[in-house]
Length: 293
Image 1: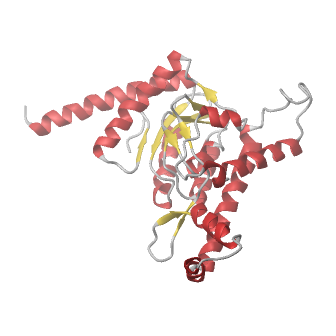
Image 2 (image 1 turned 90 degrees about the vertical axis):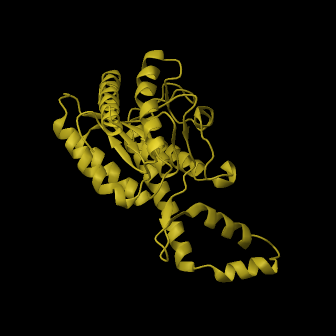
């Protein structure tokens, strides 16, 4: 058997395996399932839009729910907002499943969902939107720059090196970073109230049983957004915000750690697919068992 033919058979067999496991996960979550690997960057938006449209068109499920199995290092808050608009155009109920990690803008993306599924090994991350620099077009995290400027401008005495650094800063770029930070917080607050908190109608700890008002939901969303954007607390752009840390923030997570059937369905789909992506060194990948990307 030639090497090319052998590889073709392997690819076909692997595709059949992944498609079968995607169907198992759809049954477990009672929703369409879309796998998303890659950054939340403008260059990927059209692929995502067209993919979601085709999945919805070809789906034979009667419900209007979708579960996004998400693996991302983050990206642009503006692109995230557009992706949320696409999902909400085609689905009334959106879940996020994070078997590995969803950092920065990926965390914002998850907060637009009705449910977030994670286990003890999963991780979200602090909010740190990435902004394209005018010189190169490369994306850089905004909060690191803003935190450093805040640190320098609150010092009593500046060292000569600090003065040189402050003089070299592009004020327009700093304003852009501030806008990206504020947009990220605003989006998270909006989506928490609109989706994640929509069924939070009665208090469970403070004044148990009392009605939760819209003002209380908005105040709670503001608190969560500010804490997720507090890099002085988390110390690192890539800090692992696991179940323990998220529970401390009182963010409701559907923990499947001790649900063997659901855990097997999620890992059985995610793990071989991400292993393939890593071996092939793919920067962006979408999957649904009905649609070819």
